[in-house]
Each structure stands twice: as structure tokens, then as C-alpha cells.
Length: 73
Image (cartoon, rainbow, N blue to C red):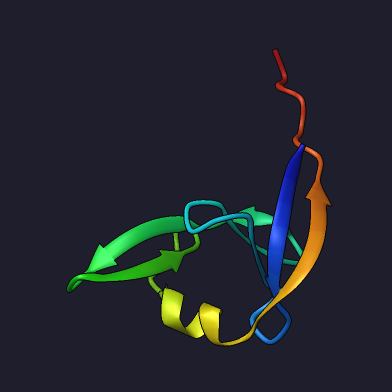
């Protein structure tokens, strides 16, 4: 179980910490990138980036619990 502590309603992104970030409504985990000494997040297979500064502007404390999917084997 993953517990997200913060939520940005405008971007629909939840964070547990700076390493664990999920985009909703699909609850898709975002990948971390460093570009020109700035922290960015992006979806797998996408070229669009969302900066940590953008996410941080609208963060509100809100607890969201995510259930991990069981492994198929």
C-alpha cells in the first residue's frame, strides 16, 4: 500500500515524497528527470515535463491510499 501525503488538484498529481509521484485519475507513476539542474517529472512514453516547482505551488496536505496490483506470476 502506498500513502500519498500531498495532492495538487490543478495538475491532479499526488506525492508521498519527491521520489514517489503519481498522476491521477489513472494513478500512473511519474518518472524523475534532471534537466539543466532542475527536477522534472514525466509520464512514461511522453515528452512533456512537469517541474517540481509547478507541482509545489498547488500542493495541499491530503492523504490518498493506493493499493498495489499483485504480480501476475
